[in-house]
Image (cartoon, rainbow, N blue to C red; front, side, top):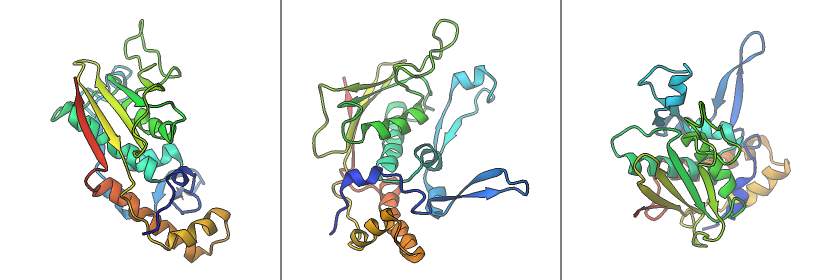
Length: 242
């Protein structure tokens, strides 16, 4: 089967793929994002509690913050194997860390194997940061001497890169218990329809017809759906660390 080089998946193709259009109110203001892939609504959401959001009055105590795959798309500006893989690996890591309990946003530390520029660590880290609250030095420093700090909870271990065969590997740590899990994401087993090799260059160059653009978007998202809803064995590997 034809395989699309992985690094092409980080291109911002959302506009080309007709990934989203904007609903308009009579006054012209944006109402909501309207995605054109029905399965986006079927992707399991990620729910967390965030004590900072409660403290500052954004939500009531006991109410979760709910993140959807659509939120990840809006953050990145596109949908691809890197963004969908980041969403799924975060979901799986949090389930392993917290089991039946609700994850606590802002109390999770994340460390990538390899630097921020290694493969697609950077784009993937942005999705993880969105969901977990873990941030680099640019993050929120907390209230009253550092309470609810998110700054420097996202790190990159430049001296220890992930296995070359995988897309990324990240360690998630619960700051309250110290429990750690490492999750590795690989997508070499993900086949692509051979016609994508013909349609992708035309779509990227802006010379594809409307019908070709739509077909490419549908073929592109066949793989995204697999990652999010039916990942094959070996795509996501989790191990608990001591």
